[in-house]
Length: 139
Image 1 (tube, one colour):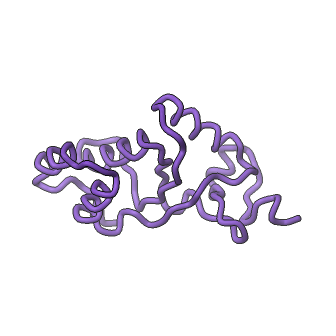
Image 2 (cartoon, rainbow, N blue to C red):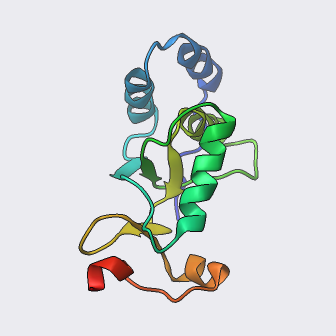
């Protein structure tokens, strides 16, 4: 898989520009310029079937004195090297602002209500059954 989200050569200029942007909308525009297609979608909140996911997000928001906003789905998040400083910075900035930043494919919207459900691998980690629809939507 090709990595189109590696830091460009003007990374330091972009980081400096980021410090001067007045709104999250301006940050989003910058992200779209630097990494077109990185943002893939938005989900309002986690399914009620997974209160631990919602609580974790709310705990992170409380530590940052912000309210939960939305779940941002992105193409890739890479934390374990020094070639993705911008991706890490963008993730951190949006997280500290109240967003839950998640990889595309790890979470997807319920077929009926559009709340976030985890994929099969995450369900295995959570030791919960995988499903494509929330429990309340099946009733």
